[in-house]
Amino acid sequence: MEYKYEELLDRVWTNLPDELKSTSRFEMPEIKTNIQGKQTYIMNFNEIADAFQREPQHVLLYIIKELAAPATYDGKKAIIQRRLRQSMLQEKIKKYAEEYVFCHECHRPDTKVAELKGEKIIKCTACGGWWPLKKIK
Image (cartoon, rainbow, N blue to C red; front, side, top):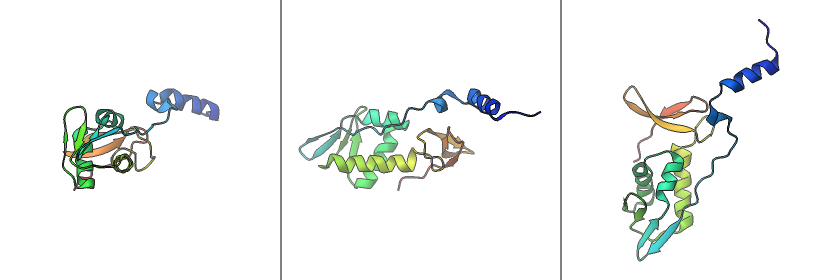
């Protein structure tokens, strides 16, 4: 059976999942902070975790380790026990996204945490690539 190029493209397009047909670009959430005394509050912490499709505790653990500062999560916002510039926190969030959100193969943000043979992995729903979920040290 011989196919024409246009027919093959149409066939592939109709079989693609809807989220891959979308041309909207992922936008990294802009971090919103509030400093009170010696504490820095990340006011939109839930929004950031939701945009990354990650557990807030995982994102917070990464920030704690990167900043070497204690922090808590109250269900809505993160509270870091240190005065920090918004730009520094934005940089840490960006580094988290590069390591744990964006696919290492196709660089799309369409990844999910999954399990394979009892081990946690990050799986890309766009290209099918996967890699082990690196433990935060």
